[in-house]
Length: 266
Image (cartoon, rainbow, N blue to C red; front, side, top):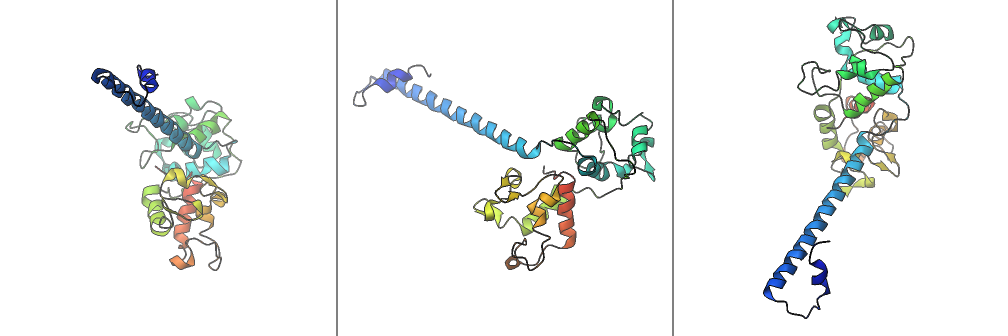
């Protein structure tokens, strides 16, 4: 409790205070208001952190190679570690080659992510020359955590499954223009059709009554993608017919690939 506050509130409202006492009460009131403001700010910050954690690091009960790991490796790693380009004499396109490793030794030591360069080099400081991938944005926290858990859980890789290089989708370059030109006008603060907002990431990842708008690694469960590939005469297609033509196949494919790779939103 602020010192002097109890005395101030106990005074009859009609009582005139001496100048010095009035100053003390005024100071006590200001201090109390400042404490309330600080408490509210802390509570807001905690809530924001909780919301951010909910969508950016959604708990994945079981890491699945094909669903979670493969899209990360194909979009961020295989382009430099394949039969035609073996940087560091390392290939990451097959199970056997990945387990074998390269000039630096095994890239994956099953059960020990802290000794597996496939994971440890993705969590180096951004300015470290050894960070992977060496070009473009670093992997997100959720992506590196998936690699860590996959290795810790034994780095299971289905026999015969081979990886191929896929284009890495960057939010700012590829996804943001699509959302801003086709979606945000109807899904923003003050005009959130269906309760959905796509102007800020915390709202875009919210789990709404009709289901999540974006579920990382699962485009088939993400309405931001599925509603764009409905038949042209379906009243639920997005953007709606009244707003113009449906998205082109190339744009819907960008949304699909972005979500499949983890829906990284800086």
